[in-house]
Length: 415
Ligand code: HEM
Image 1 (cartoon, helix red, strand yellow):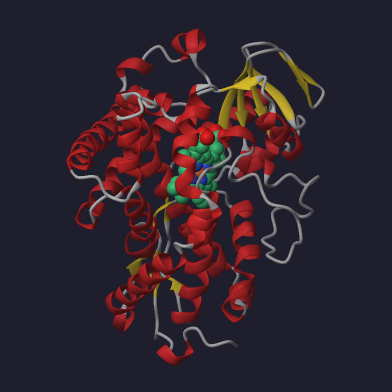
Image 2 (cartoon, protein in one colour; image 1 turned 60 degrees about the vertical axis):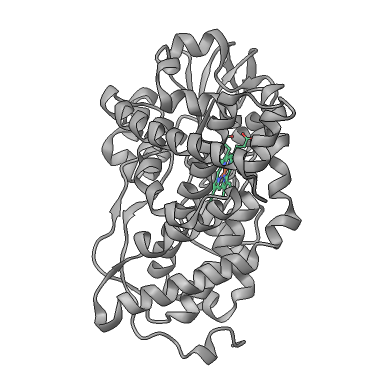
């Protein structure tokens, strides 16, 4: 098998459901490998980390974007992604990121712990009630989706009653983040993006009339009063913040719970020692990363991992593969929350490092031990269904039985 075939195996439906064997096929050619004309795949941790921080690498924009993605302007999904901070370069990127960053300072995130704990507790109680008598419940629908949606909606000032709207729209839109997309898939992504854009157009109008103490109102103000954000950028960033704020965290909770249920000894360790949640969550992020890849182009020629990348190369930075690089993590295919190794690349690195990393970590660090302590008999119930997606890796459905809840007195008691 050559490198192009190894990449094709990653893009196949089977590769999208379980990418890890294809990563090993690619890794056999070295940490950076050419997989087609002007196309390179990066599986090495050190190389991906270095490239993400290298200012010679850029998000696809300008003429190159028009060449590679000629349909982007007419596509609500592609243009929303392209115009948000997620896919822009300096100075636009730094300007937009600064406007939003104030909402994600460590102090602000720590202040959200109570909100997260309260919402998680309520969702667990509902899940326990729905699963009484042994009937299976879908962890994705009952917990992994509503918790992060509730948190990001609170930040953005989205009314609670509207939260159920977003699951389908966001799932559809994020198809546009796949490295390859068919016209039919793009039409689905565009429909989701249109719904989200219409929704936020109305929310912006409402917050313009009556501002609140929320991020939407702050960004509307940056547009109206200070002209630091164009109308198109305002909409694009609101859509991306909502979607980036929960699709990924939903998948961290779903992938994370599935791994814990498959490793009862480790799960027991977390149940007994909730203070170890930060180490567990980082290992879950490494072992089955909710974001498996990102892309860049080279604005100049770059030499990395013994390979020369000419100007205008298109790079697939395989974060999920980097997180299983044996040069970085011994026995990388083993889930081991006790490995004392530095953070995985799951939130990226460099100027686009995830703005919500602290919030996502907080949600998982609060929710996962709470689930294990309050529902000590939580168990898988039949085969879960993986979403056939490479970039955002997660489950469509994860059936569990909840068993007998622990007495309330035991919930937060030290072991
Ligand atoms: C960027 C992963 C949760 C907001 C990123 C990037 C990654 C990532 C890999 C960098 C993309 C690149 O370099 O191309 C994740 C994961 C999450 C998560 C794995 C959950 C487990 C969140 C949350 C929010 C958020 C909760 C918001 C509340 C953003 C934003 C960016 C970003 C705004 C763009 C930053 C920029 O371009 O400067 N995320 N994310 N993410 N993330 Fe997250």
